Length: 394
Length: 216
Image (cartoon, rainbow over all chains, first blue to last red; front, side, top):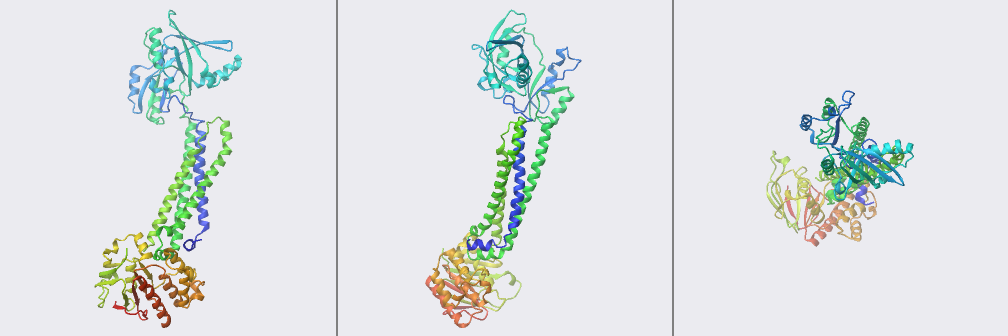
């Protein structure tokens, strides 16, 4: 070891450094592991939807026994829509437009045919995310893109297919099957054929959605021309978690469709994650102070030597180096241990989470946050060492 | 940079401000130390000679007045510049020596020399022999007598290039023979580099020849 290092490392307390490494490791492990688990488990409660972003709510009036037969009672009046638009948390409101004609869909698969009546709805295109080039209708091709609710596929697979002796379908298979659509006007005089194909499944839209342009065009061609008030609205809100939204919806007897993100389980997960994170951060901050104080104490004990070395003309960087090395190595070691520990922890719970159907994959968030924290702690401690050296200069 | 002159203008340690001090060649005067000249600064204890050395070396700033290297006010020098000056331009043997007691005589000297690469190990051995402490080269300095430690300190202070060498009571614990040898050694190094010597004492003077004597 260099003479300078040997002189300046005297009085180094390995138990204090070990204490820092252990506590910093624990703090970082809680942060890394907690964030990792949160990311991995989150999908159990909040399923991200690629078609509708999370700021969008679909609301309808609660159907009660009193209004069960009166469809106009569940429709929104112009005044109600205006009132909704005036709420501070509303960015934009769009109508659900229903098809004003009858739809008959049939599938021919492996020699067996199947047909059913259907309904279509449309919302303004700007509410549909990731619609891209698939989400357009061209009347010459006669091709209609459709987004259906994931629940429908589940109902078919687990409720219907088994009892009817039909094969189960995956999302991929479903989107590969062409649907023959026959659209008939209410009076039965006009008729049109189209090919529909499912371009996606949504968790948050409980409907069968077609592009707005197709809906306008087909209603013009086949509809009776009668105007109908919308019974469902799609709302772009500024903050989906806002309590004011919940209160407003409750007091106006409205409910949100397909809403899982605000469920109490998800809320609980958020609260628990926040508590765990807070504990991890507190321990990490305390460990940071352990290192800061140990280095400060060590340098204080060696202050005369520091001063003498500076009197000999030692460059400041050379005098700081032995302490900077302790800081860098100890912090890096604690982080590496925590990262490895986090990965090991993940192996223990990942199987169980996958069994529950979670879309796992958030391992990098915890590691990144831990890394950033470690770098900050390292930088502050190195700066503290430098300033302490400068202070012992005179 | 080469320091040709060290100039004191109206310099006074702050502790002396409210006191009436006797007439001094250094304090409250205009004094210039020149490179190549040898100076003996004599003072009674408490006269501020250690302060004077520390001011020149930059380790203390509790003074009034202005201290210049050539035309540069030393108050404007940044720390990194001071560190460079301490390796290349200013050699200093403080009164308390500032040796590391747990290191051996040789290690103390080599520690300084490793910062400057100024002297061959063989030369250091010769100096240790000349001052009669070659048998102590691998002894921890903490177990040596003050006189022996002073000799180690003198050799260490020569392990760098310098324009001025500041020696604060360097021979207070040396006998006349060792004093003479040390003075010879310092003068040889100083004259080889064209450097100035500033040596202080309260009684036992470093035996350098042709020196200018200043009363503090």
